[in-house]
Image (cartoon, rainbow, N blue to C red; front, top):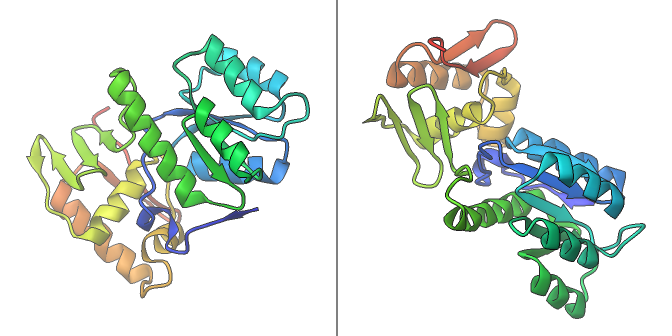
Length: 243
């Protein structure tokens, strides 16, 4: 099973994935469902496989940047699958997410892959490890998307430096305003409900519909027109009206 950070993804430092592609290989359906849902919500493009053979088929068409592999698969060891995928796709980043926690397994995993996470795991840790790995890979492969920089139109949000700019000019936001804007930008064109914003940004702290409306109003004033839209009865979305 997994654990989640009670502070929620926005406060746990979840990244914007910038459409980074992630393959999850695990034969436990609940694990696949949890990782798929949370990674997709964080902005990653996700595909899954339940065996080594299926993983090979998915990788050939999907070409992920990173694979999350279980060690115990029905047809092949995750260690061997990692070696096979690396032999064919040398630029593939690999993180093990597994219940095998013996020191020998950890050492083997770290020898063949980029990281080793044991179950039960924290979703926030998986996201953070992915973010760090993608940064390292991007340094080696400049064409990879930066997982910490979000763009919609001429609005830019850098989650690494917490800087925001529009038309190339800096925009000064409070921490709460920044978290709301970043969450919306992780899902450009999609509607994020007021309840989702309350859950992910305010969490167990004080917050209500009026707090969300106030922050949205402040963001509109600070970033200017044409980007932040209200979908009445559903929530809020960020999209470039000029595109």
